[in-house]
Image (tube, rainbow, N blue to C red):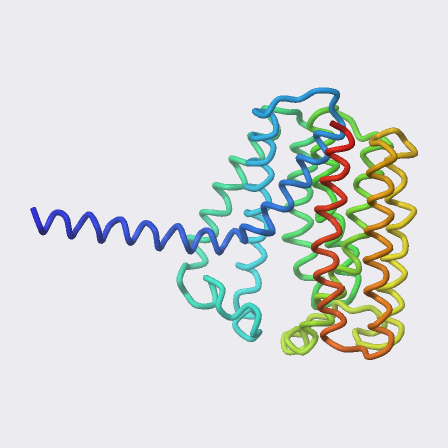
Length: 298
């Protein structure tokens, strides 16, 4: 009896350890936020919806996103070993093998894409597959080529709300492009702030994500400010096109102004702390604006 109990406890501990590794591998917070963006697009497109639809879309979006980030980690395993911010991930620490990671990625991808395609529509499935392929096989290798990678990476990063819209409507409309554009432009200051913070780490492995020849200088700070500035008029477009009401439009503009204000200090000191504030500002801006859109729509 004692031996059986010990084996059971050991098996449970082993399963929990494996689940913890998979949890880390799928980058839960990132994948959750991406799937939430798809739900936002779905709600904004719909006159009425049920929670089963949102659950299926959220889970499907999470699985496809998780497959994408796993692919990225598989391809960059050796590079991740060299960087402080990534060296403790499951693959660099050999807590999971490339083969097992690939198997998990394929399973998640197939379930996610099948759910989106057959529960919603083919176009939503095609867009989801395109996002995964673009992120894995174009954005990932381009990170060593130049800042064009940020432009390319912003496309799959902005597709989730558009996919959510298409999942409900079955078509790409001007409204879908508007909510895509907001998330697309948002990613430039977001990505560049991260690249500024981890500039030394990225330099070790040859990542060239910052504009202005990859340097932390006036031109890069100006680019960050300029793209943040674009968010002010973009935040009003959902109101102008009748996607949401005036209240969320005001919130979007107000949040964009606060976000923009955080970029000014970067001009003065070119410091990591100023870039860090911009990064956190980007993390706060998007969910607040998206939640305000949902509340105003409902």
